[in-house]
Image (cartoon, rainbow, N blue to C red):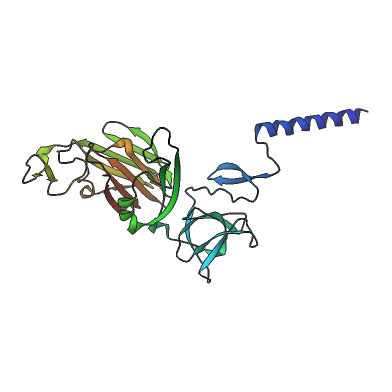
Length: 321
């Protein structure tokens, strides 16, 4: 009798635990399943309908690849097997994103058209990430071109891949609401004259100071002598025909305890810094990306710096208007 009583108590306790877990975690319908993925050490859980492709999570571990297939193309499949439905194909020389798997021979991929599915790992060739950059373009789409209060707007995000040598033309064409798909380094200090971004073994210190006209040679327009055309014989950015108020004074990057300073000649044409619109990213292979949007109002411009191991890989200035 006692054994039966204790057995009933145990069953009631287990039932309570199961109900508590169901209430506190997630109720799963029979038509659904859970898709889980680790992003760093953080577990993400997604509720997805059966037979629907899992969500592709873009993160710092996402790789860029090309296909390695003698047929000149490979299939993107809905599930992790060769008999699964074909969603799309990736052709030769078409870049795509992929996330490695530690428990499957099939890697989750996303092509540049947004198709997401699985490709067998032997069909994927990892590319040199130093030469390729992952970016996200955010677009606001409206049902009414006048953007009236009654129009329906929808934000669309497109991930793309751009080669290092093509970043100039890309940003000249598509600069608005564009960001890099890498870990953003946290801003840890900001005052009127400097900002500091810091993450583990990386720190970026940017400072600015007042522009002293007595230390510079000013070139004026021949016809309109109140319009500034050059500073120290160079075209400049940030002040549209006027003398600037502020200029950059230092860019110092410490990476793996090694100090690197962006040369003065690379920053002396940049004026009216805006610390509030400055972002710094880092990639897992050691690249540091600095993006700054500056202006005095009319002279809006943006500048991109890419640094790795004490070497300035890229500087590009693009005009916003």
